[in-house]
Amino acid sequence: MKFKVENIDEWLCTVLLLCLIPIFFVWENNLHVVLTLLISIIFLKNINSLNDKKRIIFSILYLLLYLIMAVRGDTLNSAIYTLSLASLFFVKPSFLIEVYEKFVIVFSIIISVSIFFYCLFLLGINLPYQELKLKNTLGGICRLYPFFVLVLDLNNVIMFRFSGYFDEPGVVGTICAVILLSSKLNLKEKKNIPILLAGFLSFSLFFYLILLIYILLFTKTKYKLITIFFVGAAVLILINNEFFNAIMLGRLNFENGSLSGNNRTTIYFDNWYQNYTESINFYFGFGSNYITKNFPECASYKNIVVNQGFLFFSMFIGTFVLYGWSALKFSKEFFIYLLILFSVIYQRPFIEKPIYIFLIYVPIFILKQQRENYKQQNLRLE
Image (cartoon, rainbow, N blue to C red):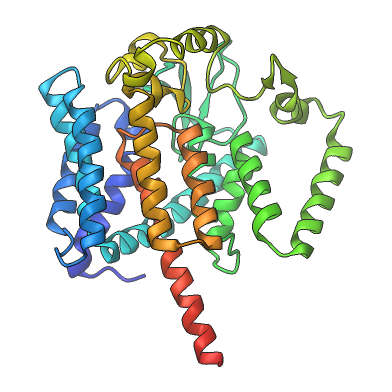
């Protein structure tokens, strides 16, 4: 991986995307609007040529969706910010692929450093730290150690789940899952090994379930059997371990018809949502930021339905599914993409943040490139 002056836009996008996850040093500065506008300018510099009619049609559809979101914003500034997000959909696929590959490499490097210092902490080595207030919707406190963050729970007790440089373990689990699925869990690529380790250390229920679903659906039978064996053995060995029960097994119990570890919403919100589905507002929503103002503790696909309405939600998901199908056809890669799309929307429904739009859009091109490379290899063998 060499730095070249002509690739400056790709590197800038990589750095901006990492900052917009966001990394801890961005929390206090409220820079996300400025950084988003900067990345939008870079995207517009690398706009796609106008000779691909299919891409033009889908780009316009995406633009219309974000125009709807912009019109329903609270202020002119929020409308401009939201509309700027649509610039991603006009960018050349080749540019997005280059950005994605650099993003994965840099993410792998910085998460490796974070894991190293996290392991020093687990070994009992005293490391300096400072306390910071979290800037996510829940607020709270975290401890910022050298190169990693530990989130404190509501009782100010340290959660030992790995958060890397970010404000919650679920962020690590989501990003690691998307990267690994997009690479078809290719561990021959060394950059994927620390990413897999980070996902495991995050103890993200989402990460474990998505990885298990992928292995059971898309890998060879021997890998399925090996996975079932090791998962079963791990459960039998650790079933009486208090820590393992607290962070994993205890979250797999069914309570009130859902997993106890499914903390994306609250009982109060779910009851409210049930009544909401029976009202006319269900189809059109209450407008952007309604969830943030009224249910800041919730983060699920229902956020989009409440903010923008079921009709918008259906059009949004439908557009991504159609574009994924048009690029990947009825293939294994298409179903892998569906797993990425629906899992990210369920876990991190923040379609107003560049990093999550990037994670549900660019894998289409990554998987398409893999599919085409596989076809070319088969032709050479013939």
